[in-house]
Length: 141
Length: 301
Length: 179
Image (cartoon, rainbow over all chains, first blue to last red; front, side, top):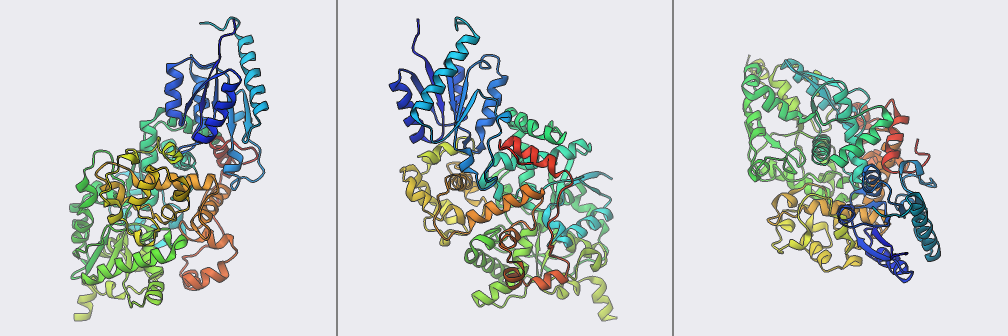
């Protein structure tokens, strides 16, 4: 009745991606990891995921914003919950010291900042999947 | 003749004012109208790509969008660094629809949009390919007879290679030499004509830049050059303003005039030195001015 | 190493195609001022020596002349890798002490974000932000000479629609209060 949920992690830091993958798998989730938006997009188009965990600063720059916007425009991915986990503020704190992340320009369900506590991570992931299932009862295609 | 959207770039408003005024004078005389883009912003130089390439990209996207809005599909940039940034930002957006879409999302904040309708030219490209050497030759009134000019390509006018270009286009171009020849001067071959001047290393890795400048100045001097002609403000400033530093720190005694190619063009076309921004140098250019046919006649007469 | 992840979006082939021919090092005009040659840096990336790569001054000594990228027989865009490393090192605040490059890039970017234009690409931001114009620039550039010749500006130019400009930037880097 409640099959294993499959999550995709897109983060260029293999250590961080590995760590959150371990936390999620120990809680019974299945996870795939890609290290850049390009491979991440390919994975999203190949497999069906219940949630995406997305980093912001990757490759050329703030690619996570671009990817989140693209997902929200995509017919088949639009409804998928997206959780951003980012160190954005720290990574470019020198440009805009003390500024908060602008939620309006990152069209995601929730945004948490690195480092993330395991409990908080599991709490948010669980809540987002639940809310998504409530939005589309049955959850099947 | 044709009207071009003109993107001067930050340097041409300050240390490279003489490049700006000579470019405008020469273009005018050759029947080309340069119309400065309204409210253009900095191209980001190289520093922006050190922080976020998408941020660098949006700076160029705004300038391209402004040119498109003014309905001028041909944009010309005199600074090689600006040219490279604008050219490749344009290419990247044309290749990548997602990037174009993302840039347009950002441009909305300034009521702008970009569809990819602009072609980016370097100023030298405009004179050599669009106006043409024959047309320039016809307008030469005061040939720079006997003047030995070292054409300095620098880096970002030719590199990285553009789509459709072969290695020979970036390794062995001759268009700068041909332009110098069209002015009645003698183009000098020297090995470092395409080697980097040190660019912004002058601020961040001074010893490296001074050493690169010394090699370059030495290479041109050994070839018997009277003047180095540049097509980029950063190269000009490094080679000219820092020449005394090279001399002081590396024990050389260079006194090599460094002029913008547009200034040499202007002289040959008979424009008065003052109108070409000549007179603001820290390394004197008198030997160059004396090579003009009119001056020789004056002396002889 | 993570550096590989940074490169996916860049032009050119992955660094693990390097055949160690050293053309990049031979064409590099700044190689003698680098602690590792470009070829060595590629080898270190390929060997996963992340800490050693980040401790190197090599990529901060790159002048972006693109000679290496043009001549690499394997199609590796070496200069692009140098850019990616600069970004990585700035984002993670990891670079050798005493380098001017990282600070310079930061100041430069901040100047443009505030005004839409720079003072003088390549020079002034680093000095002016230090308040060093009367001192450093004076000495280093013969500022008086340049001022007298109308070649030095003391007040930064600003674009007209600077508020819109900053909002535009805020859509790329999603931080509040940019404008």
